Length: 360
Ligand code: PEP
Ligand code: MG
Image (cartoon, rainbow, N blue to C red; front, top):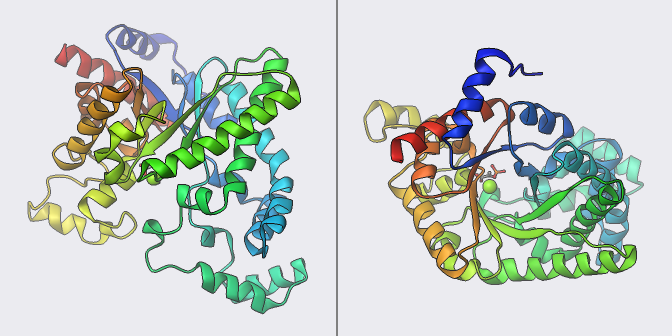
């Protein structure tokens, strides 16, 4: 546990006096949420839900869902995942009681959940009582040449709305269960990889319908928000439309950098050092926010979004949220918060205060 007593704690407290932006954290477990709270994080800016599907019974149910041949089969598997998800969210909301927790709906392409090695495929086939060919043909069906630009994010939630339904139900039920125990849970449901208003609207409709259904079943209500990642350049350019539906924006600058430069975030590391050495780039844009190109999209989307919705909450949850010069840029364009990994929270708090002092 971080020790924020003594000089370090004093500097942290002092920095908060001069700051405008809040600092949130990126956390997927109650433990990380707690570490970040101890470092002074005021909420979760990004809870990635995909990591919750990889263990034991969860990965089994996830694979059943992926291998199911119809909606009914997928729903049956998702019913098994619901209690796990609800428990995950209860833990995280409780660790961040009183602060906003942005939960992002499932983002990665489904092929990440199926085994690609023959031996593991064989094992899975016998475990599930299906022929190995069923697994192989599903793996082949899910294969994509550019999965990071492929069937992921809200593209999944819009092709398989039942996934969004399950996650929305788990989030709302978790918050209601905690409310019954006197815990102040504040869920913010975030839709990933939105590029068009229709993509967001369809997801928001599902979330709101599920929430109303759960409120009726439980005879109680809670406040929640629905918002979106801004990580596809088209979403930034059409932010005025998107803010008609979104109550908050969170810049996913990892994907936004990838798509603005056209650099693969998984492969660019192979040539970026040469680019930097030759002076083509000053920094690695995946580490230090490119203030000119990507930054222009951040600035423009914030302005356009707030023209439609002056109350729009805007933050950043890409890697840049904990990098001091990027934090300074975020303060300058008027973001409400930055979100970074738990151990970067103190540096982000300092950077946010310094930026605000400098920029006035
Ligand atoms: C991003 O794209 O910046 C982001 C925070 O999401 P992820 O890294 O999970 O794609
Ligand atoms: Mg992303």
